[in-house]
Amino acid sequence: MLRENWNNKLKISIIVLVILLFSGCRSQSSIQYADDNSDLLIVKKIEQQYQTWYKTPYHYGGNSLNGIDCSAFVHNFYRQKLNIFLPRVTTEQLKSGKPVSELKAGDLVFFKTGKGEKGMHVGIYYKDGNFLHVSTSQGVKFSNLNEKYWQQHYVQAKRFVN
View 1 (cartoon, rainbow, N blue to C red):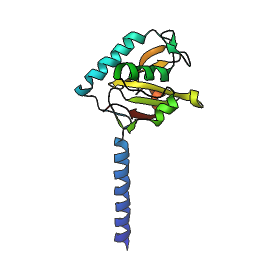
View 2 (cartoon, rainbow, N blue to C red):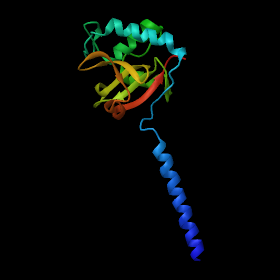
View 3 (cartoon, rainbow, N blue to C red):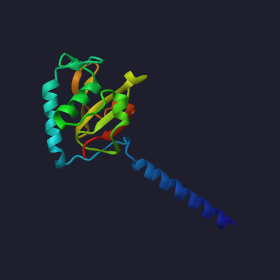
View 4 (cartoon, rainbow, N blue to C red):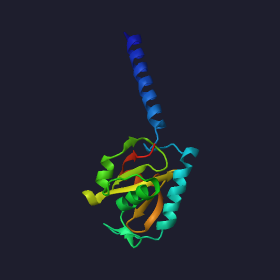
């Protein structure tokens, strides 16, 4: 009886140890990057988009170099650079495309940053954890998905290009 009790405790201890080991190995972020050379053409197009728009401020509902919002920025990139027509509004963009777990250049990354439709944000994944978007305070810029703010607000990524 004593030996059986000891074996049960040992089994439980081993199970707990294995669970702790595997949970400790998990990445803090569920976002993975599949950066590779096949994305070079899209990477160049994202860089061109940045060069064209980098001084443009954020303006809700805007769609010009005088001011643009995140969904119009993404919509324009896909239309002008990739000849793909996306919905104009972030919530509709989120409903489209193919969900992905490993990001490639050109994938859209979505965030919940506030309430309602105005509380959704979208950017274009670039490479090395960076994405291009329109910041409400700094305009068109690159940010990194590993920043705490973006990790906390990340919702999903969608792919519209093979």
